[in-house]
Structure formats: structure tokens, C-alpha cells
Image (cartoon, rainbow, N blue to C red; front, side, top):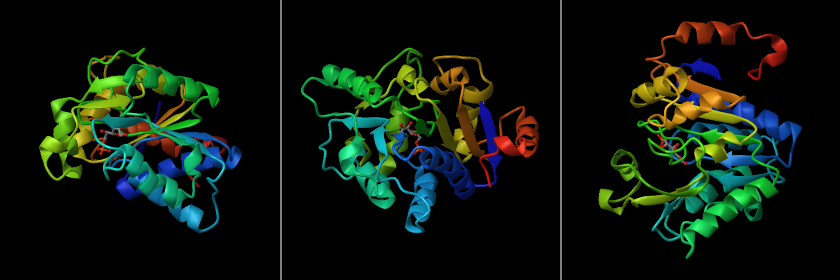
Length: 262
Ligand code: F6R
């Protein structure tokens, strides 16, 4: 794991975006894994600015969303299909035909979940997976006690997650109770992952993910098993990391050839 501590959310988005940009510059037909929620908004804004400036081109990239609610219509403004179209596909100039979101409305949810993982594999796997982390340690919607071997499947959202996401809905009762999410095993198959966490509400989850024991109680800790995981956190989210000074020192002393931050 590489831990990058930055001063604020805007800087976290800018630094994480450099990682994604480097993948797409190297491989224009890259396969991206897309998270929703507040954490990656700085990434998408930073990438969109570079697309606008003509520095980056996502028109040949493909993408797979991390998760989708079960129980709301596709056209609902908070379905992740809608969010991804509005916040990612359009501003980044991606081809909507090459964007997949788990089908939370499928008649056969289990078959749709299996097919989703098969589609990722058929695309050659995800080159870079963008992630956030929930205050309870979830990544994707793999809530505490999710198996490290899990694949895309239906999950019940934890009450805390429903409460956290109520800000996107008119009324907390409208937050769906279920979702379809890539599993921890699916996420670990991505060639590279970049996770952004900002704010004090994420400090405990970040400490569990980075320094805690491998535990299904903190699903993010599964990333300790990943060979290429970059964790970008602001000072508040880093507040409970016991080795914060070591991470700062390591990042400041990276050899030039290893740096992705220009
Ligand atoms: C979103 C997702 C979730 C969020 C997490 C943090 O697609 O899978 O794991 O990344 O709930 O949400 P925010 O970023 O809104 O704090």
C-alpha cells in the first residue's frame, strides 16, 4: 500500500486523478472501475478539467461501476447509473456504450451479478479501480463481515450506510435497503486501485484499512492484500494513522522514476 497524505479534498482529487491519467495516457482503451459518492468527485472534476483542456481523452476507455442500488428505477436521479452518466461519462467525454453499471433491476439478480463479473473478465479486467471508503470500513458496498473472497452480488446496506447516504434523497426512508456491489474478491482482481478518503468521519475506517488487522469487520483492510493500492487521504482522515510521519517521509523521498505526482 502506498499512503499519500495531502492537505485537503481538492488536493486529494488532484493527486488521485494523476494516477488515473497516467493509466489512460499509457493505454487509451483502459478499463476503469468507477466509484460514486462524495469521495471521488474531486477526481472526476480534475480529470474533466484536463479533458476540457485537451490534455486527456477518455473516448476509447471502458468502465464498470462499483455498485448500484436495488429497488430504485434506472432513471431515478440517484441511481448510480444516473450519477455516473451525469458526473463521469458526460464530463469526461466517455462513450456511454462502453459503460456498465450492475443491473439492480434484473429479474434474476444472481445471474446478473455473475454476468457482471464475467463481463469484467472478458474486458481484460479493470486497469484501475477508483474507491472511497465508508465510515464503517466498507469498500464498494461490502459491509462489515463481507467475505474477502466475495464476488459481485446483492447485499443489504448497513443502517449506518443508509443514514450516511440519506443526504442524497428527499427522505431517509427512500434510501434503498439493498444494492448490487462488486465483491472484495472482484475489487482485489483490479490491476491497480486508488482510494480517496477525506474528513474526520473517515479517520477510524482509514486506520483500520491501513494499519488494522486483516479483518472482515473492516472490509477496506482487504486492500492490504493488493499489490498496487494507493490510498490518498487528507490530514483529517489521516489523523488516527500511527505511522503518518513515516508515510509522509516515504512519499517525500520517492525516487523520481517512481513519482506519479508532477
Ligand atoms: C460508492 C461506494 C461506496 C462509497 C463510500 C463512501 O460507489 O461504493 O463505498 O465510496 O460509501 O462514500 P462517500 O464518498 O460519499 O463518503
